[in-house]
Length: 291
Ligand SMILES: CC(C)(COP(=O)(O)OP(=O)(O)OC[C@H]1O[C@@H](n2cnc3c(N)ncnc32)[C@H](O)[C@@H]1OP(=O)(O)O)[C@@H](O)C(=O)NCCC(=O)NCCS
Figure (tube, rainbow, N blue to C red):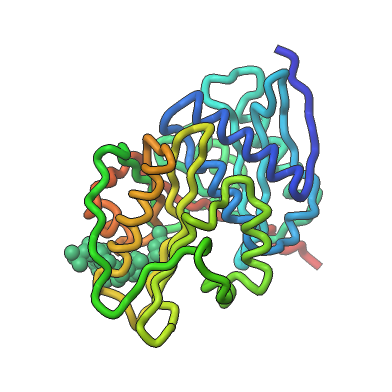
């Protein structure tokens, strides 16, 4: 197999990352942490990482591996990705190039989210001085045919989708003015799967995006939020069950959602999702140089 390196930034990066993760999913139904739609969700807001030259390995059929670096508020995320079962580029090679990139960009703080069953990456991280955090996150899946019945929206609230409305996007407050324009740049974004709940007075009570990937037939939930004042009335359950139903109608055969809190895990497991992997965030800070 002839593999060569390609560097890409901006929307060209996003297209390659999308192809890489779709190929990874087609190679293995549950491996890894991310769907292509996760990285498209990360695109919602401008980041310094938009402009860097991200590294991919590409064969005749497209990308087979990559190093994805993403600027978050607290640290940069680093995701070394290899298509499962593909041996021409090893994880240790990808990781070595990730460390080179971290150095070249002089990043100060880096986090790598790892599946707890990915012993090879855990070993590479330990060797590079990354230390595990105490977060408890994970990935859950369900077959679309096992999805729960659509739960009724509690009285006084209405479900809306972006295909029906031109009001400011409820994500603007957290993700910035450009959020809708950025989402519309994403190949897998579908306004009819971009749901929100409004209270009777028009206040935004919550939102949830659902992403259907026609290449993999996976339907992803990300993000999911009910504002504090509106929690524990069944709004999340109503949005979740409605969104899963729309994903199934689009053609999703499998449904996925990740969680990062115990409350979210309870919501998803309560709806019939099964935890297939837990994950841990490994953190590194650049040592302070002596004077
Ligand atoms: C997670 C979240 C969306 C739940 O929204 P919600 O509208 O309050 O949830 P619902 O009322 O529909 O509850 C559905 C189920 O979720 C679980 N749940 C919700 N809140 C819970 C809590 N505080 N403690 C334990 N379980 C909880 C329960 O299983 C609940 O079912 P039950 O009421 O029959 O026990 C909301 O707490 C939230 O937005 N949190 C902050 C953002 C976040 O963590 N999002 C998830 C990211 S993956």
